Length: 143
Length: 142
View 1 (cartoon, rainbow over the protein chains, first blue to last red):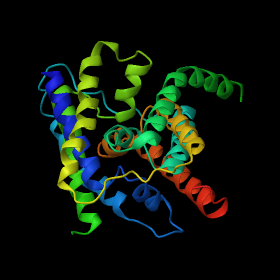
View 2 (cartoon, chains in turn blue, orange):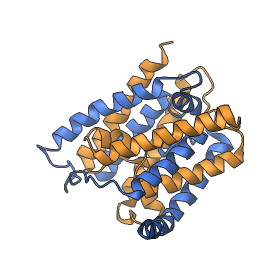
View 3 (tube, rainbow over the protein chains, first blue to last red):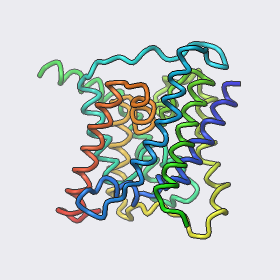
């Protein structure tokens, strides 16, 4: 049951990334590049995605997950150094390449060697993140 | 051919429906970096199969859709592999330290009015924008 829901969600996610053009790094970098030939597409993708998600969050108030268990707890409001530093590092990589984790998977079949190199580097980064995060905590504590 | 923004909106709604299916079906937030990262650092070992099913579907559905397009599908990724490696490392480390990326903090966080999701999104968009302007217009690398 859980695997089925995960596959349905992944299929919709992959289809959405594909048809929206979000696996095209030119469109993503074009949206970030406010001083170039600005491409508004990403804003429409975000807006379009937030509509069904907002409804889904409202539904979590009156229902239970279909495969059992509980919904995620309410959001915490702590803005720590991890959130800020991590998001800045992610944004730099996103700007440099035009790729983020979802599109790096969705474009595997046509992303070529570059796409595979990106994915490999991203996985290495994810593996190193717990260690780097702990070191970051120590720096933040000392500062 | 319809303008790009219509396909952006259609694709966005599909992404949101995917997030809704993941949330209402499995009770989880659909964040690509979290789903992948949990497999890498071992924190998601007990949900490994559903993570793999999700990722397999993300990768396979575009293969099915590709023949519907008459144009060649490409990511237009920079051929500079040094830039690709640095970018990949930054995306991997950054999303896991921040505990989310464009799907988790962006789509799923903003739609529940999560302050963390909104702050993360502002920071990665600002960092991304400054990076593109710096490396494209000033340094001419990308």
